Image (cartoon, rainbow, N blue to C red; front, side):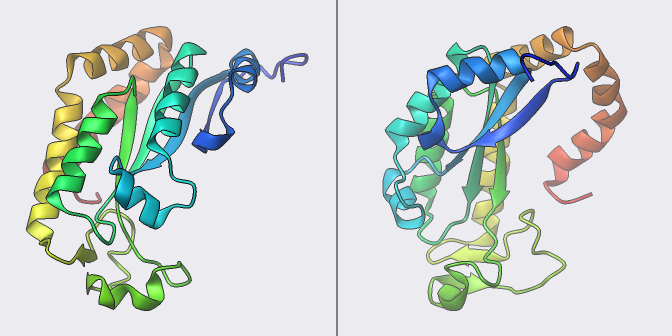
Length: 203
């Protein structure tokens, strides 16, 4: 893609342990403009429970390497994992906002059949196995000592804090300025996004 360019740009997903400066330079030269990085949670203890080789220092290093290479970073997080508490959510927010992350996607933990936790999920909290809601956009699972109402409130607060940060707003404006065709997509979906932001529900 560097030697024979396709006249296109792309984004992709990465695991933190696979990030290195040399590879990032090649990806940037090939047209990569954004990398989505799996973070899951910013609480070290909770991360170690649900992800092998989970290491927040490695995640932070990966984010900084990606930014240094001139590539946007999108963090992929999850709320409502077994063991989640209001304190772990606060830690996740502090961790994410301490990093030069441009954007993030916060999904709602959904225990799908075949996943490692599915067989014992009822031991870890309240699970409503409603297939119409099992889309990572609904809290079908509520961890012990949490309520669905609290999770929803924290979910909205996480996004609200992100979008009210001047650095975030400037980052979006810069991206649109560098990519004029993005303006049309942005304006086309603006009202849908506003409705989603207000409801936090699937449209």
